[in-house]
Image 1: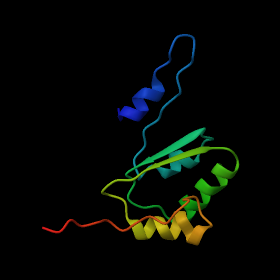
Image 2: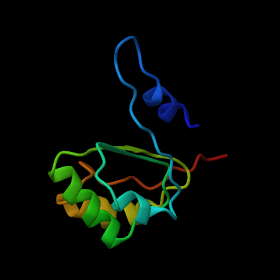
Image 3: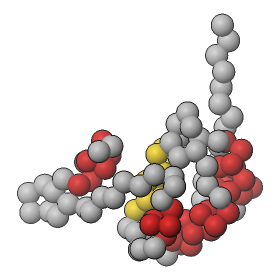
Image 4: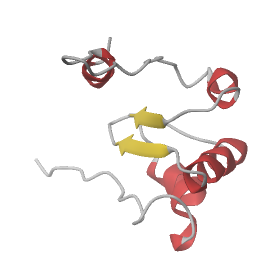
Length: 102
């Protein structure tokens, strides 16, 4: 289990653990079929318009969203569907990957 998922799934003392469900990028139908308290996008390559609109609606209704960047993320896709010129979920545009000079 991904470390963040493991951490959330552990109860401490009398506290209940969160129910954690790890889904891949091909399992959006499962994600969108139920109410969620929190969605963590960890190195998710792309989202489409339907997924971005669902995320935005859910966040507006109180769902939490954490976005962890990674090497699989398509910056142009995130800017188009999640930043949306400042009207989307991301507070800033996603930077293009930096390439180190050799």
